[in-house]
Amino acid sequence: MEALPPITKERIYVKGFDLIRPIAAFSVVWIHGCETSVWTKRLNPLNEYAVPVFIAISFFLFAGQVLSGRLDSFKEMATARFKRLMIPFFIWTLIYLAVRYAKAMFLHVPFTLSPVETFLFRGSSYQLWYLPNLFYLFLLFFPFLKAARRDTRTASFALLTVIVLAGMIIFSNNAAITRADWFTRHVRLYFVPSLISAGIGMLYYLHYSSIQARYDKTAQSIVPLLAAGLFILQFFVPHLFVSLLFVAVLFAWLLFQVKIDSPFIKRLSDNSMGIYLVHGIFLEGIKTGLGIAKHPVNGLLPTVTLIVVVYILSFLTSALMSGNSILRKYFMGN
Image (cartoon, rainbow, N blue to C red; front, side, top):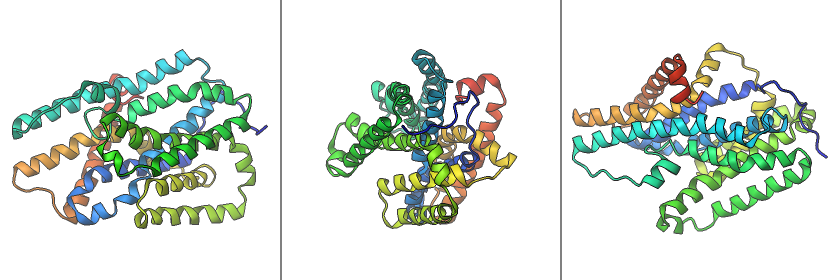
């Protein structure tokens, strides 16, 4: 039976996660803001790792909470995760709906709403799907992780099976998916890839001790080079599978090699979820405002400037809102 990390009631802290979270948050802003320049759009595949790495981190930490016994009750887990994920999801969905409605009325364009799709799965802005998706994954994997404590080898085999099956789905029927109904598209494009990301995080936790014991100087040399190579490969082979493979290798580097300890990086990391939630308002607001003023964002420099400005404004807004306990609890999910 595979050895687990030492059981502890203390929260697991990985410095590498603090480093990658704000970088991944910037990548998310890039993904949503890159369309106004050919060059930023071409570089976009380099950012496809962002949400998968967020999910992998979440499930590494989640596995630690469940397998250590710090999180033992399904009701307790579901209630806490609902408050942390779904309440902010509903609030931000209403906020973005109001923004969308105001924009539609001002620009005299149609406003449509699908209640089930909007309030249970995707939200009203392109990034909000992450919150309910993560919540449903927690519900799905909690019983699995409880059982994994008794037999980690079987649990690992089950996770590998899920990853392989999800990978097969990703590679199949890519053309047909565009003609499918919204729910099928959502499951295929969002939930299924998330199974792989979650599996990566949980597998690393299940085998943390054995990987750490074998992570010698050779691994310390090879893993960063391999991660860099896969990061670049995303540009030449822009496929989700390559990004997921990059995350799988990157995770080892984050866990066992990154030792950066910076208060500024830590503060950026603490606000990465806030940046993720808030950035759509600034991105769409600035683009719409400049469009109305007859100065639409177009070209490399204006697009990169927009992305950077939106990231900074989102960070400042998140930091300001997180300073208030009520706003932090209900808007930021902290």
